Length: 266
Picture (cartoon, rainbow, N blue to C red):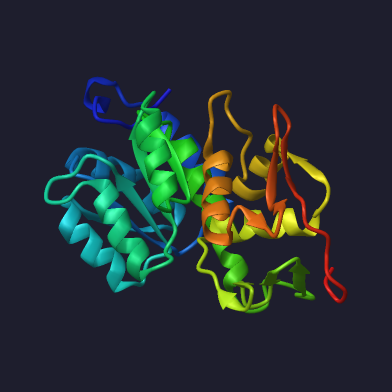
């Protein structure tokens, strides 16, 4: 199995396997621009070699400060960001990006390092992928994120409606969210997660279902991605509406948005 990571140079790469992966993915070809911010030059070259034939336009930057500037300048469909970087670490890069842009960010973290994953998701990463990783998994994560962000494009959402639940209003057409009339800035993942919760207000949704529907993948045993995105929503929307807890945790099962829809909201 081919894996990419900081120790990948010690792995014998199977070119035949790479060609097979590419052929299987050609029917999904896109023209999305992806920025990779990673100081491992050889890794960037290998990822470019793999993703390029799939139709992705890849650019690489090997310093955090330069990567932040390039990402903020715009024009990218997605940013793949490593944590350990010279010039500026990955978390600071993400903070700068989130201060100026909603571009989706996929963080690369050390396998088994839960702290890096949690911090990255708290700051606003859309998802994470531990190193070393299978190139097919990288491709799957990228495509899942891009499918979500494409719902922003005109014509992608049919019969868009506004949802009003308690003091929260969500417009699925413009992908805008308001709490008590004030605009709330959400990442693409946070928006999709909130929309799913609002549409099922008063009902329990399992973590597995949320992961499949919002992240496009099954959760691993120790995957806390959904939990961290829920935590971010609570911080941005407020933990309570009046005396009622806004998003309740159903231990061992999932979550429930506890507000009932107001008249006119669906």
